[in-house]
Image (cartoon, rainbow, N blue to C red; front, side, top):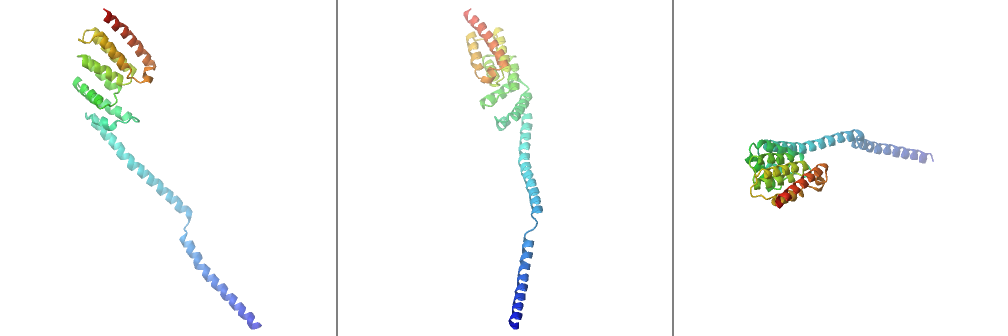
Length: 227
C-alpha cells in the first residue's frame, strides 16, 4: 500500500514537471512571434500616408510642369497648345493660353491667322479673341472679314461682344464700306449668327439689350430695302 502511494506521488510529480517544461517554450514562442500590435499599426499608418503623398506628388508635378510648359509655348506664339489644353471641364488654362496668343499676334494678319486656326479646329472662341478681331476689321472691312467678325462674336457666346460686332457691321454698311453687301443680306447674317449664342446668353440681361439692337437694325435694314 505504501509502495503504491509512493509510486503514485512519483508519477504525479513527473507529469507536473513534464507539463511545466512543455508549456514554457510554447509561451515564449508565442510571445516572440506576436510583437505589440499598436506600435506596428501606427508605423504602418505613417508609411501609408507618406506613400500616398508620394503618389500624389509624383502624379501632380508632371501635370503642373506640363501645363506650365504649354503656357510658355503659348507665350512664344505656338498656337498648337490650344489643341492640347482644350478641356470643356477646365477652360481656365485654355483661355489663358488663347489670351497670350492674342497678345502675341501683333498684326491684323496674325489675328486673322489665329482666328482661322481656332475656327478651323472647332476650338472655343473667347472674348479677347473676338474683340481683337472686331478691332482688326475696322481698318479695312470687306464682305468676308465682316462675316467672320460676326461669326466669331457669336461663337464667343457673349452677348456684349456680339452686340459690338453687330454695331461695327452696321457702321461699315452705313459708311458704304461693304460694297456688294445688300441690306437684306446683312440682315440675314445678323439674325442667323444670333442663334449661335446659347439660350442662356440670349435670355440674359445683356441678351435683352442685344435683342433691342437687332430689332433696331432690322427696322433700319428693312427700310433700306424698300427705298
